Amino acid sequence: MGGMEDILREAMRGFGFGGTGFGENGHAQHRGRDLLDEIVIDLKDAFFGTTHTIKFTSAVKCDKCDGNGTSDGKPAPACPTCGGTGFVHARQGFFAVETPCPDCNGLGKKIDKKCSACDGTGTVNKQRTLDVKIPAGVMDGARLRMAGMGEAAPNGGTPGDFYVDIHVRPDKRFERIGNDLLMHMDLDFATLALGGEIEIETIDDKKLSVKIPSGTQVGEKLRVRGHGMPTGRGGFGDLYIEIGITIPKKLTEKQKKALNEFSDTKPSKKGWF
Image (cartoon, rainbow, N blue to C red; front, side):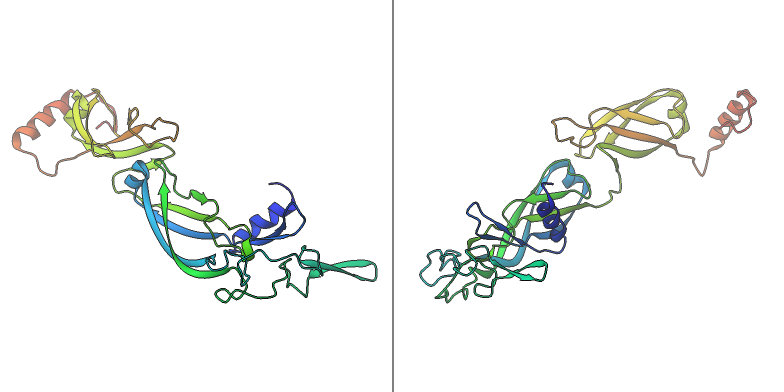
């Protein structure tokens, strides 16, 4: 932040307000309101990045007067009462009070003949369409800023900014942890004990063969490097596979016999298998 003016401006953003500053010549310089919208996307959209179109109505620069608010479309001269500052000073006892200029209503400009299209404000309401480019790897809760795409300011001032808050829906297959992804996979006892290979589908719909080491434990997480979310620096996070076990509800006599024989040879340890 760059001082109290920036702090106040940031506070006003939450309520959709613009503000009044001063240009290099000391004249009042109005700022258009900042706008805020929300977009909800899927995790796969967050992986690839996407473009979302927003339609809304806001104040835009009046074409007839080029935003100056004058009937001839030329910039209005500075208000002679306030000297273009938009404020006048009065003393009340020991205190100096600053109030909006009564002749220009704080505008800092004196408009004698107003534009018929915007009634001297320099802005008109119009429906707009804005394409928001959401970058790959965007985080849930991220706020994107499009400078100068907010509301137009009165009488040729600086336009506000447009902010978009991004929300990512929970995914059925993957849980995001930073730039890493976590998925759950249930395997049978034989694969966990003896090892083997399984095929998984990554978030970008690729088929991937993953080796299961012999003796893999339930709850263990296997790491697959580089198959997580984009990091924004050209890299990717990792994919973790949390291992569970599938317990069959019905067994054949042959399977029961094999398990009983295996149980007879297992180490005597409470809670094993």
